[in-house]
Image 1: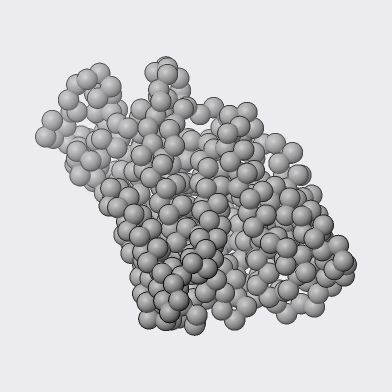
Image 2 (image 1 turned 45 degrees about the vertical axis):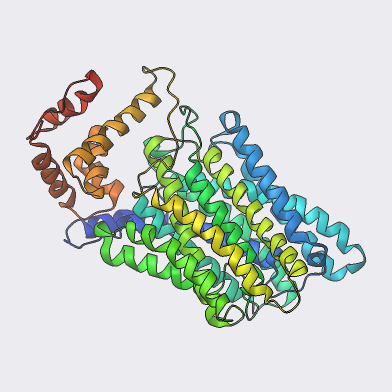
Length: 493
């Protein structure tokens, strides 16, 4: 696998980019397989959201049942993560996901030709699709949890665009061809995931050995709150037969992040997403509703764009926790995605209830907006309690054995974070410090952070200056000092 066309392209790109002093290196971005996550996003919209096909099966609340099954599977996998993870090295999750998603596709399309049994087909599709897509989500989450934040931002934003493009293309197919082409999407997505895992170095692959880590409840609660607010206004967001994964606002938000990463590269400020996604969500969900704009193009554009930006932010935070601390993506994403789907569905039902009990003569849209506003204010309070991408968002390590290699790695991350804060290191310098502490070479760090030749040396020089040291040996002494209860060495010690 690594010796295939994509691998060759990546090697050639490394050779070319290594001699050019650009602000950003595309060397790590050549493999298109990492964008395969967008393929399963397209499958969800075509089969279960039904943005442009009126499937008879969808008339039986297929999507709600699908969400319940998916959430149950995700949370169940999270509970059993220590026994079943990692997925990348096991054949069963891949095979089960492929078989069930293919079966779900067949059931939904069959309801067009056999409307008399549409209810039974809807139930079968929801069960098969819910279980299959949960496994697919966790496989991709496990992959993204192996990547540094720059890669996650680029690949995830790119995947969102790929998913939308697939949906736009598929809108032109007649039903028989649409069925055939939709049936191959699960296989295509899993093939991309398999290829992507093979492109990772062995030391970056998921491990079955991970220390106890409490739930990062802040980011999960935050995502749940905003998913609930989004669910409240979801009925207004499907304009012109475009669903959540193909809306113009969705594509625009992803494109902004993707272009930002390309243009700024190593200088890309993740805090831009962090500081603007949530306020933008508040404005997009509340202001359009207050002015009666939620049912037109611009209301849709603002709301879907804001929610997409926040989804990218959530992926960055959770993937970064997995990447930095070696936490199981099956466990972490299983909890977050399961809770997210349930709260979004809850928002849809609350919206229906508010419409039913709204007093005569009162604009029920304004009532819905008021409830959404309360949710957004609660979410903003959580936002204000955290200020960095590298934050743990309320989680703590539950140490049991200081001699355990995994827990030693976590302790090393703690020491690097403390030193970075004390010495005023930038976010990228903090990232380089951690990799230096893990005995990575300059070449290894350049490859992992996807930066041009010589950039890491500049970061190392700045780190040494701020710590008042001159060599890697002195750096290790500084890193060891907190462990022994001593004051860090170097300037200002």
